[in-house]
Image (cartoon, rainbow, N blue to C red; front, side, top):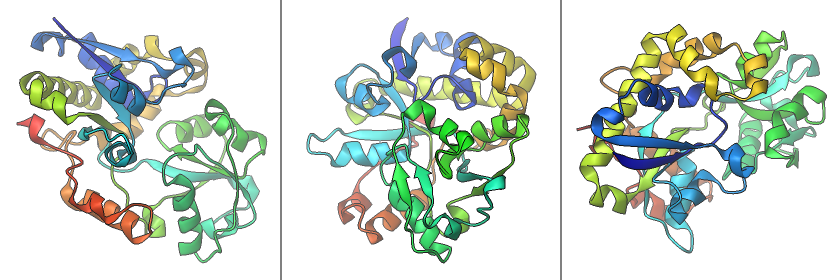
Length: 303
């Protein structure tokens, strides 16, 4: 068996279910792979998945596509490349409590937004407000990463970024009504999130092995899509006590599964979609135009 490590972006959740299933059902071991999942809770989120990849702590990392751009354009460049898109559509959104009366992004002017301090996040949120007719004049706070969702529920913040298939499901299960604003509805193109990334040199050295990792991962996500209850049962042992008590897992997976894709496109990425996103970043002066010519993703491992 060859040991490979995957750095998760959050504690295990529905977005990670394909990796867990591929491990549990032996899809990785069939290819001679022993996959270890690195839970960010174990180090208190002190190192990002991208940093773990950069330092060689992990062979793969789960992160937004923005991390691939960041690693390729930092001073100490990391030749990172996205190799697998977990979701074929963006399931994230800006959320507000329905009781707040904030029914449109423009109404966030003068309100408090709880930010994860992610690359481009604050600019994107302001652009969403402006594109909806507002000024983009928000007050932005940076709470502890694990407590951001609760700042919305307690009223410390008026809005924050959520995954509709996770926090959105939790809110629905608790009878908490949300207003949700997507980037697409505000005319902002987006790439893929989350994605699996690795170093290009790893692919050059271990092409066949990494291709087998991708194929086994794809099998795991397709199994989850077609076997909801059985997949949830395999996910449960990996969850935090809070998530076990507060999350309707079958509802979350049922909401997520269609976005894993089909047998023909599960995990793959489209050039046009990435190009629209990177062009938007350049046009909004968030990145240098050099990114338009960089090879930031590949579908070659599906072959």
